[in-house]
Image 1 (cartoon, rainbow, N blue to C red):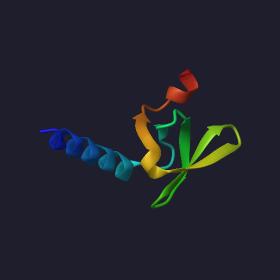
Image 2: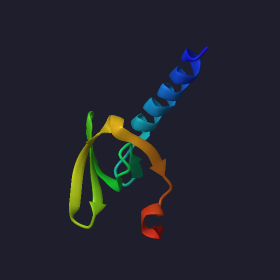
Image 3: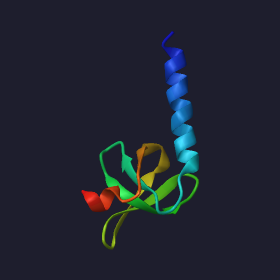
Image 4: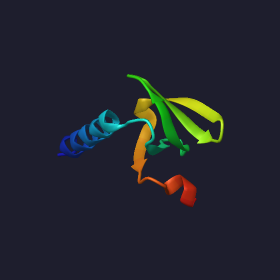
Length: 73
């Protein structure tokens, strides 16, 4: 019974990762908030502050935020 919800959650996460594009605002599992500047198959480059970018594994991206969220914080 526990396998079904986990499979559903994994499928939703895969769909999220497949739909990412440059300019999307995200939150990582570690709580890093930023805007995607570059993407490839395994990594995403995230701008976390002006002229400050970090590379994250795509798998660590947890949430896609609505546009403009970063400016409102």
